[in-house]
Image (tube, rainbow, N blue to C red; front, side, top):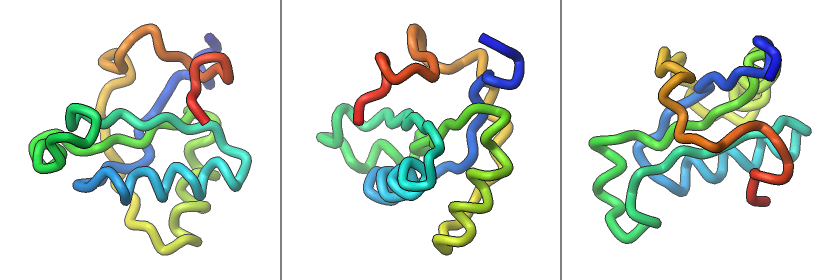
Length: 99
């Protein structure tokens, strides 16, 4: 994976539905995105307040992703969550991304 393809968090959300909506805006804009949500498959919705839902994009798509989210009036958090902690074996590849 190129350095420019390394994942970067574009936004963090307290609620799963907000993160899923933001991911949809990015996908509609042609930007590959991945959600990291630790809420036990939405069975423990309150867990997301302790561990926010993170929306990941490729580093080289980050600036455009911010523009898309801001145009959709979605609050964008500039998280510094390290890409090294991204759960493996996830990579930006259509074979691994659920649509």
